[in-house]
Length: 132
Length: 132
Image 1: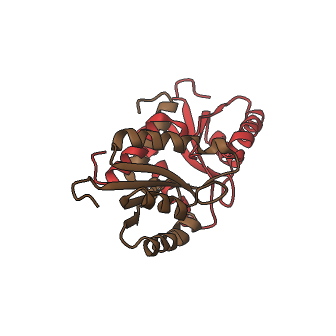
Image 2 (image 1 turned 45 degrees about the vertical axis):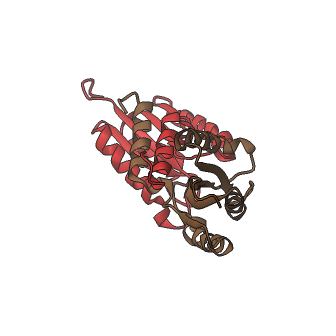
Image 3 (image 1 turned 90 degrees about the vertical axis):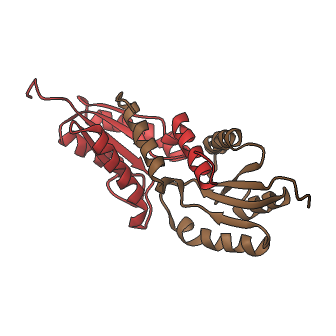
């Protein structure tokens, strides 16, 4: 590996999934925003819990194949349902076992973050016509 | 009705619901933030699509009983699944029929809002240790 090449970081936006393909649109927009902000040394892709592809293990494998030396999985969920609470840690462990040279972690789900909740509250206030 | 009393506005934060009661915690935190920001003339409550109570029609009825002259339903969803896309407009119509003197509307789901997506992108960047 070229020692002077910058490290490639991966972000996998992990969402629930649905039958209707239109459901994924906001996540595609989020991925686009992230690509623009994070720059060329960051790979951004989507993964889904069910009904849509790729699943998380396949998304991580694709990031690994693209040369990412670290991968951050961001659960784009509001509440932590059973899948996120129980199953996600197991899938992360499986990914680490499959890619032992890559640093792989999952963040807390976006809906648990205080600044995200502040942004949601501001959205609500704007909808009421109040400053937000 | 006292003509000099301020109008009471209602916000119903409409979320999916889950079996585990802990799932609702972020929504409770969001409701608290909103109450602090919106002030005493705004009622804030939660409603759920399934598995948790109250459902949306009951939450709207409670806001009406509390004296709200207008009620804004905010779907706290990322993607618009079939329930939000197809069923929510029907429930809003039913609420309007049940409460004809109250102005009732639903906003676009939070995950469709550009500023909300910007906040989510910023969260992702902070998780990577980049400014966000």
